[in-house]
Every structure is written in C-alpha cells, then in structure tokens.
Amino acid sequence: MGGLSFVIQLVSIVGASIFMIMIFRLIIKGRLREEYSIVWILCTLILIVFSIWRKGLEQISLWLGVYYPPSLIFLAAIFAIIVFLVHLSVVNSKLQSQIKTLTHEMAYLKQALQQVELNAKAPTTETVEEVE
Amino acid sequence: MKILIVIPCFNEQAAIAEVVRTIQRTTRQQGFDADVLVVNDCSTDKSIQIIRTLGCLYLDLPVNLGIGGAMHAGYKYAYRHGYDVAVQMDGDGQHPANELSKILTPLLQDKADVVIGSRFITGEGFQSSLTRRLGIKYFRWLNQFLIGQTIHDSTSGFRAFNRKTLAVVERYYPDEYPEPEAIVQFGLYGLRMMEVPVLMQERQGGVSSINSSRAVYYMAKVSLGILFIYLRLRGKGLKAV
Image 1: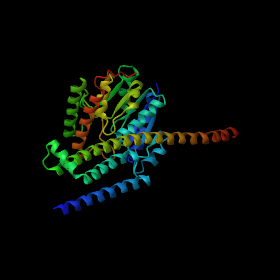
Image 2: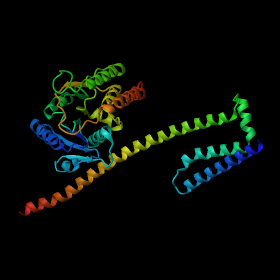
Image 3: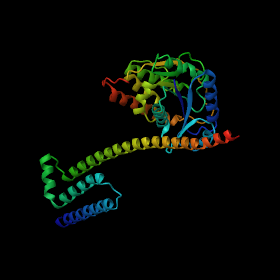
Image 4: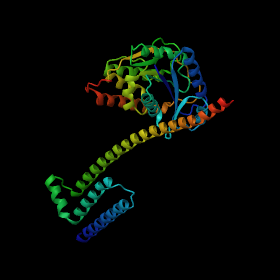
C-alpha cells in the first residue's frame, strides 16, 4: 500500500514537472503568450505542492467536509477548466471584433487606394483631350 | 442631401449587375443625389470582377464578415464620408429600385430617423413562406414587448437611416442577422422609426443565407441578440445626437 502511493506520488510530481517544462518551452519559443500561461503555471504549481504534501490534501478535505479527498481535486480541476474555457471564449470574442474592425479599415484603404489610382490616371487623359 | 445606397453582396454574380444598374438609372431619373456602394463580402464567385466594371463605389472585404459586418462597413463608410442618408438594399433584386422614393421621403422630410420598407402593411407582393412569417410575427411581439413599438417587418433589409442613426450604427451594429436586433437598438436610442409599405420581389439569383436547418439557430441567435442588446442599453437614457 505504502509502495503504491509512493509510485503515484512520484508519477504526479514527474508529470507535473514535465508539463511545467512544456509550458516554459512554449513561452520561450513565443508560441504561448505569458498572460495565458499564468493560469497553467499556477495549476502546475498546485499539483506539485499537493503531490509532495499529501497530508495537506487530506486535511483540507476533512476541513471542508469532503470525505473522499481525491474528489476535491476533481471538483477544483473541473471548476478551473470551466473558468478557463469562459476566459478563452472572451478572448475569442475580442479577437473576432478586432478582426472585424481591421477588415473594415483594410477595405476602406483598398477603396481609397483605388480612388487615388483612378485620379492619377484621369489628368493624363484630360491633357490628351486638351491637346486634341 | 447626399444619399449612399449600400448593397451587401455575397455570391450574387447572377443578379448584382442588374440590381446596381437599375438603382443607378432610377435614382438619376428621380433626381436623387445618390451614390451606390457595393460591399463585396469576400464572395467566392465572380461577383467582384462584375462589380469592378459597374462604375459604382465598392468595398472589397478581405475576410467574410457576414451580412451584419458587411453592412456595418457600409454604414461606417457613409458616416465617415459625410452622407446624410444611407439606404440598405439587397444584392439579389428583392428590393425594387422604384420603391426607393417611398423609403427616402420620410427621411428627407425629417419625419423619421429610420425608415423600414415593409411587405406586410398592405400585404401585396412577395410575402415569404408561412414559417418565415411566423418567425417575423414572433419578432414583432418581442419588439412590442421590449421597446413598445410595433414593427411589422423587423427582418426587412430594405431600410434607410439618417445621419443621426448613422452615428449610432457607426459605433455598433449587430454582427450576424442584424435586422431585428438593430430595431431594438434604435428603439432604446429613442430614434423615430417608421414603416412604409413596399412591394418586394422574390430573389432573382443566389440563395438565402437562412435555410431550414439554420432557422432554429437563427431564431435562437436573434432572440439572444435582442435580449442582450436590450439588457445592455436599457435604462441608460441613451440619446442619439
């Protein structure tokens, strides 16, 4: 029994650490923005803390009246995931509205450019007519 | 009075040329100082090649934004370029150009800020299918309930705004299926809305953006849109300037 829980403790510490390294690598390569990585780093830190300090989870569960400590982890994890998903939807909506504004501005620029090109052509035809 | 007629165009290669030419001819005959602006919403057919040859103003959106985003581009353009009135007309020929004066007159006489062309007041012309009419009835009830104004044809895309309305629309215009939602927006801004009876035709080409499988989504999306724009703007004492 004691041996098994040591194994699972080791697995979760190693797993969380690898996850943390992955997050860092993504930030360093510029593929993940820091503001989105904060939540992931926090989650990983919590995971590592509780995989080392196993008594802590049990104590907090007892204190909250949860009799099966792992279900507290599930509850917290699901809650965190839902909050983060809402956050992503907000980010997505903001991006969509920014894309819309950019698209409008680009269309206006294209239109203005086309007008400029037309005006640049127009005087030459007028002078030709004058010569005639 | 400078008028801009905005025509949203998504894959309307069959109808767009005829629609633009008819409008240009009609406005010239009736003596309106009107420009035509076609907003090509990233069509995948040959619409843009055709539009380039028509001698009208056009915007070519590099990304497909949907009808709301395309119309928003047109209204913003009208506002920035100092137009007094902007009219929306569909690119598929449903809105006949000879009804333009009916839509414009109340604006030019300053009797309304928003004029909506309605096919249901006199019940003549193309009336749409039964299920669509049911949906439109539901929006009528919703508008009545929320802003206390009766708009018979709240999905009609044949509408004209004056500059006061353009100032509101320039800042925010609903994205997807904007027509019913915009009515609630106008109501809460205290804009004077007026419906005038017009004859509409069946589309001459292209396909409707709303098919039966999308109808459920349409109703849900528009209901939510109406509800949330109401909650967002309600009780703010907004006044269009």
